[in-house]
Image (cartoon, rainbow, N blue to C red; front, side):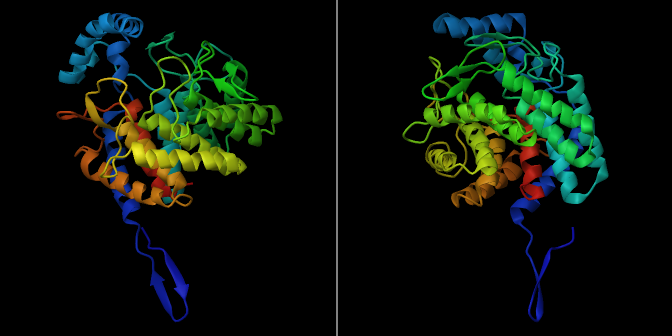
Length: 414
């Protein structure tokens, strides 16, 4: 790539390449080659729970912890000692959230190097998203390609999830910028309409509303509310919908209301879900940072400052690397997770010009990701366990998110 040059009186200065971006670029080249070889389908960490027996075992675990622990133990053991055996339980599949992240990353790389083939492939992932739309509603929505048992019931495959749809919205937005296809705007408006009209909200305090995950539950989830707040803010401005902006404001008010004095957020206000983990904290902060960039609210900015200070103090260890939980709510068998790296990079990239420590976090995470987590074939380690590593690649968790994070870093962070 041609070096950037700036003129000063009497000489030509050559700007040194950014070593963090250069390391990311090399990792991306290897990853794209791996993706070409591996293909767009993958196994998923949830495969072992998506079977009938797995769903019943996990549901029992949520209802009766002691009996449930006995029921889930064989599945946990299988996942630890023979993760590839999940292919015997469920075939590889597409994941809409992964397709959206791959599209976003490819469009970002195309803006960087002008490679038209990346735009074409990004369009291909958007076409796959169109094919995987949920059949449950006329407006476009996406969720998981498997049944998801949770503490509050089972979300059936294809149930639209507010934690997935914002990425699909952004992917079509990037596709519209690259390809000027008017149908993408129609899809974006439909996504926002579904999120505005079909995702239930619960009033919490004065003029604050908590969002659920899907059209079929009424949970009060902090990261879901942050996602809905961001999507309706972005769509409200684009489509000049004041009602969407007002709804977004009520979700944002809930997120701000839920922030604790120490700067952290619980996962949700529902009983038993008050833990604080790494990547959900990053997701809340990421959405608030994007809302602040659109609206400039000082209250949102103050929440981001407090939240990132908590992240620095409690979700990075003494070496500056991510830990899964501030305080683990249960026994965990992994030390570090690829998802924490991906979202930590995304967040640091958004904040590095606003919060000085974010630049150092960005350099540390990218360096460790490309030096220790990138495997010889190009994909990334999935988890570092208490003993050993898990290297089976899952597009949804979190190969696509890591690709997206590095691609936007290389692109300059737009």
